[in-house]
Length: 224
Image 1: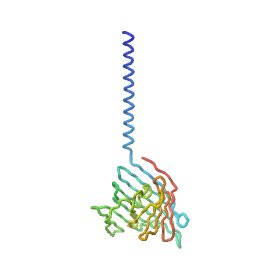
Image 2: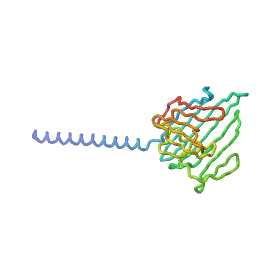
Image 3: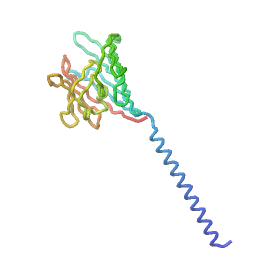
Image 4: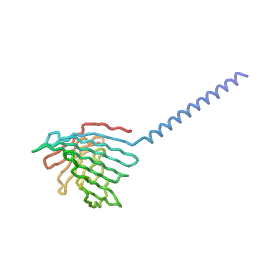
């Protein structure tokens, strides 16, 4: 066998080895992309301190899970109010959006550990049924943005905000960069929301007792 033939065979082997390595790399890249695209739902969570008249009265935690255009939100408010007497209030709220439309919302209120109220909103036949402690009312307007979305979804371009707890639809407007206000029918400011990187950092809300503030204290966002 000539040296020339040996060189050709070595070259063929090298080319075959190169092609095998290239095919392996392409396969691994395809597997990586497939794994990334089919990853589980995006989950974000954070926590806020609740202050009333400059005094911390509780905390608010929220978790939002998003997958295939659907969003599930769980929010828990836990406060302790000391006036003439001390009482503890806890709100547990679960909200579901499907393809950008509010599908259902449930808010349970506990006072001193006992269920005080139960409010359900669910979409049926293109109208919402609002059930409060067994009593049913109808909400006819579409809901695409509500209070549950405020925390991880800056309301860019949003004109109206639905408040699940009170069943109110309020205008929301851009005041300045990443700062929004909700007003009443007389254009008086009710709530103010300030965002950073699309996430709520600070909120100030008018309360019969005084101004209530939410300040973000924990940043813990991840993908599962």
